[in-house]
Length: 294
Image: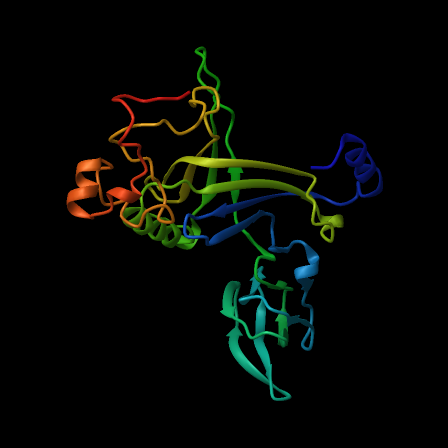
């Protein structure tokens, strides 16, 4: 995060540009959801792609994919016209998708290949278009952090994030998260909030960045908003070292540590009887009964 003097200098030289709040949600399976609280989608950092307002036929954006696994684009705003997303194949442009309204898409990409978004014609209004390699496009979505919840006790103050679910945009991600957790356990969603200056989108270092984990995600009726309770690792009550030394209770919590961790009850008896993996258990059968932290 930049120093105070750097923030002051940025404000002095780019005060005419707006600041935008970004949110990145990293699901346990590695998929990223990138959101921008902005009227239109953004490419950030700008080295990953480009963005522009299309005003007439022939306006275009193009990128050469280096080694990214996919390319993505976003078209925001109402307009009357036709746009096409194309890939250069053997010297000719091949149309992958035809666009007649606001949308966003992601496609698997071929290395060292050109892609472009081009207006065939525009009769009315001007769509804002963004085209980038993997990880560069931040989708325009209505979201807002809630007020900090104060408490008279010694509990940590709470903060929430409310994300618009217009068109059911968040529901597939929640279903994907629920299915993953049923197989692998209740791992956290990593959440990052960033603030960027629209005049400095070429600078990969944001004005501010804050990291959280989810303390709960829900889609309450009438399902128009996804509510996320933001939290942090509880450093105040966590034991040191973080992992207790137990004789019979296994502490594995990820699939990398043990492929069966989401299915068993984490006891030595079940590990030995059901999976024949007692030599790999995340416990210490030779210590005395009880937890040891020293």
